[in-house]
Length: 327
Image (cartoon, rainbow, N blue to C red; front, side, top):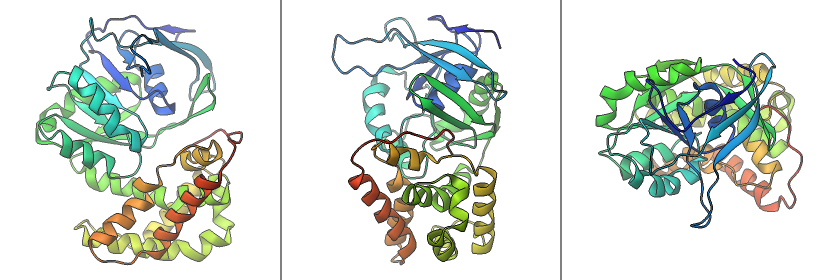
């Protein structure tokens, strides 16, 4: 990578990727996709407000820092070939309501939200558009407002949520592979999303409630006393959802393995609580509670974790310093 990346307001043969959501993951894509192929969709708070570009420091997976400049999308002169959406789950539907009217109906939309529920809501709202969902294990965080860190290298899977998206998957994967990240086509994206939901449900709320890094939950009484029951609840809900059943023991083992592997990381949910921001609990454990309700199932641990995270959010008065690392 060069010492600096300055992106111009025109795409190249790879096509133009528009990024909706300038958080950690959006900035990761903005830094890694080739020069001239990306633009952020600006958030205008007033008709006369316009941000010409987004500039930040980027630390790659090898610890090297680079200045990054990515322009804002100019709707009057640019037409994106792909839209990737990296907003928070709760913000996604509203953000797309204002964005999609400006986008050709054939442009693929790739959703990178945590948890479950927001993706289905988008696909139901725009069933005729090519809507895709992505599940990623790439780690990114923002230790301060001007810095984005590629905290952990992983993989990304992309699959179709609507019928018209299926024939476009290969092109989108090829386009995003220009980032240098590992991208896969996923024919069963729903199962893949549930796989990540299990991990998030078993780590994120505990870190948010205990205000700790991922690895610290492993010896905490709250985690040790409830993790088996949480996995039993997950297995029961997945069975009633018609998904391939996984044993609670396997789920628990995987949750603990990920917590150990990312021991020093701070989950996005814990980070949100520390910053006094809304969490995505309704799309993680809250989603499990919702689906359980649809099947008349009791999920007391997921219910308790959902309520406790919301209580932490409601009582958090002042933002606290964040700790680098996120999942």
